[in-house]
Length: 334
Image (cartoon, rainbow, N blue to C red; front, side):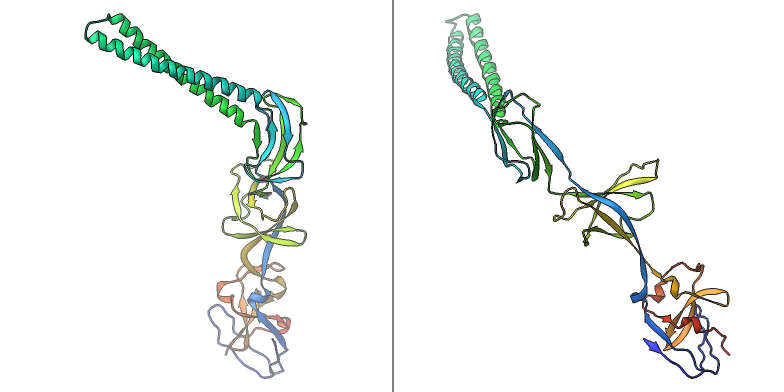
């Protein structure tokens, strides 16, 4: 807003405002604006990268042969999706043998229990000796132990069979295949490499104790001229003593690719009066504001020439003079 005042006037001084007077000549014209429209915020920029939570290599857990790959490098896979099929015939045959032994042992246990029960009844009628009854009961115990061992072996064999299909542990992208169809594998042989796609993070190195990351600043990630608001996940408790820095991690937008490099922009919450609007009057730095449609000089305590100044709370909605303040003078009320 542009103003031109041609008469002499006085402003009674408030506690924090120095009264303003004009000479008889016409007051120079000046322009005002809302403080909220001209105030500045400090921004700090840091190089940052989008990283995956897991960069995983999947290996074979069996001595077997690769039958088929269901995914190739570049494919996107979902959690639990089958990726590799391994030859499982040995494990399946082992499971069949164990189930046969299980049936045999169950039959032997049933027979032993019947014999032990019969001998126990005969012993009560004193028709057999104690040793025979005890031997029959011991055989029941041995068969029960064999049954437990076989059931455990069956569980192991079933787990081996489940390892014949290698599944994706999370939503991911296949980055490399390390084996071929028909290749013989051993436990630990590499099959695939993949990177987790979900819950990606932005990693950045920041100076120590410079920002209140929890509530004092807002964070944005700049990538290819796009700005994404981001949220702090965690701040490392470890400080790099060599350069007095520590790492921070932010939640990455879903649309940003893993491995992207961009810029983290931190904006401080505190707003500042631009230095070009600050002038010196009677040895005091301050600004001219509009009160009751008249300009008043507002001193800024401890202001430094050429440096922005934090906006006082009482001036958040003030009209500040942004042009013509160089020609305005401060007087005293009479």
